[in-house]
Image (cartoon, rainbow, N blue to C red):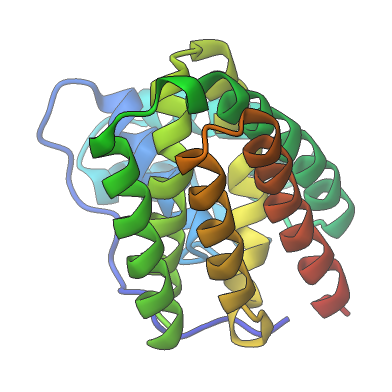
Length: 225
């Protein structure tokens, strides 16, 4: 598997705020998603605690939470490690994500305001520029911003909670293969979604959103050895 050499080093920094467990969790999760902590890399709670500048307890709690989400795994008789990239797991995750985002879109389209449409258009332009510059992190952030418009307007916390557990599995695989994925197709799909939203066509927008995610799953499958 090829890994992209664009990520900054030393993402783990001392924690200064009080919510140690949540801060450690967010830092480690981001490092795993962006492959700064690479698949199958061993994780030692003592070393991580020293890097964060805190005790081992919040680190252990964060690792347990990440294990529950499938981003970390503990091997009996061995060390805890970052979970390996799993194509089949990502394929299943894409199916779930596609359906959930379609549901959020169906709920959101009738409620979209002018400012929401502006955000959809801005994030799509940012996505296109990021892809052209081969900046995968910015591209993923722009794509998230686009889809978050529907999630925010839909206002259903259960959808958001469910997505938080499965989207990172897709993002890791997407980042690992960015050099071979033709992301401009996603830009065209976003533009079609925007048009459907302007026409207040809930069902078409939802179907296009679902296809947008499913097409990503097809690309990831085709590009994986």
